[in-house]
Image (tube, rainbow, N blue to C red):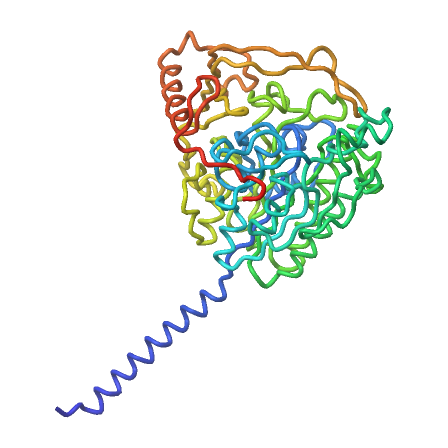
Length: 488
């Protein structure tokens, strides 16, 4: 069979056109670098302790700028109002009770994050991301639990809280020998190596600056590659320390100085992204691990107008300021009152990076429609569970929050002052329902007026207990996974 020359030319032309189209597509995909992600996570910062969230006496120009150029979520929750539990949920996308991390792990702990769990860093490593953490880890201090064993290329910071050391104000009256029986010297770690022990009070004044310098250097080093940067500040957890740059600058005293320095740190990161031309391809998120430690008075923050603070699952303990910024992708100056949570950050970043989710069950959902201000976007959560320890204490669904009967701590009289805590007392709540849209302070129990809503949220509670358990009702959850054990 003879093929005419004209036919050959047409076929060759079609093949060349197809090849050119394919090459153009490959080139475009290569040019479109996956987005970068920065998550700044503070420690014990109150809901009100940001200018744009209503602080009357703390200046936070960089966070306020983030909000004016991005989205502010007003109803954003952590998993539990305590350090390790909260951090485990952020990094794994799971309620902390699912993965067995409770409370605040200390230097005597023999548990930590399990090798079977996937952190945000491990999820993003699937897509070739460079990853780093500069700050407080608090998911186990033994080598097998450190960030470098869980997806992070680089680590610099403290393995647990900065008050777990022998220089806390409430033990300074004791001889060092007795102090060390309570708390060993605090280590500063780089990678997996202790580079400084003991960490001194002078060292603590530099922590925020050191974390920031490492963050800036990491961005500069990885400007041509996609990266995930996690900056979990040690502050404003007590004891409070601040550098000379901000000492005495705030009307709010030392606590305000510390927040101003964190705000400066955010500004340094934003300026670096702008200087390197990365602004339009970087999502920056800011939030905190739990509410303020109210017993420390002027060294603690403010959760107003929310009720209570750290250590409780009233909203003052678990609702946090949240700001996200991504020029060109998140509209400027929007506000979202839908329910979101730290467990949602992992699946959201995974979706944006095109990374597969972990092979096991997670609890978070993609909240990009909320962050990006899509018309009609609603919370992906029919309900959100609020545990303290292994006890299911409350459920939020839409505007409603149902508290199950439980005990909780509350200030007993006046709080402490200048670094020393005041006393707590135990209180109890019954089965109580609050409309958080009209009653943000959880002050008006309307359970008697809405039995049908109480019944619906109680049913949600039963579903959660079956999956995650409940120590109050002695239910063992079917979906709880084992925590990491030393030596496994």
